[in-house]
Length: 154
Image 1 (cartoon, rainbow, N blue to C red):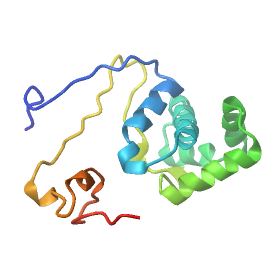
Image 2: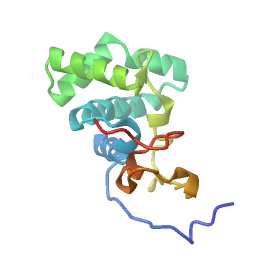
Image 3: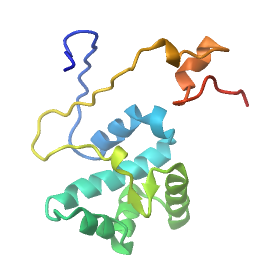
């Protein structure tokens, strides 16, 4: 069992449970998905709509199918003020990044949050071990992927 009172930092982030929450959530996950601000904003819009629909649609498969419908996509696009080409290009980028697979959001990027909650915790556990140390350049350690000894420069 992990004791969060030791070796922990806690920061409180004020937010409403709307698109702003989902954008902040995705911003903390940038090291994992590397999305641009626009891509995060579009994905946050989908997550927000998904959260709203989850109140009435309990079946995850049905929920995912409704989210990829033309009507919902049009509603999201209009809500965020994007043109059809901008929106479609951003969706393509989300698919290429792996954040959206089979026209649905990868579960890793869907926060497990309930309505009427007053708090959500994102817990990051840094697995501190010498085996993760970059061999060539210590500055590259931050960008090292699992199983890699170092990152090559481009």
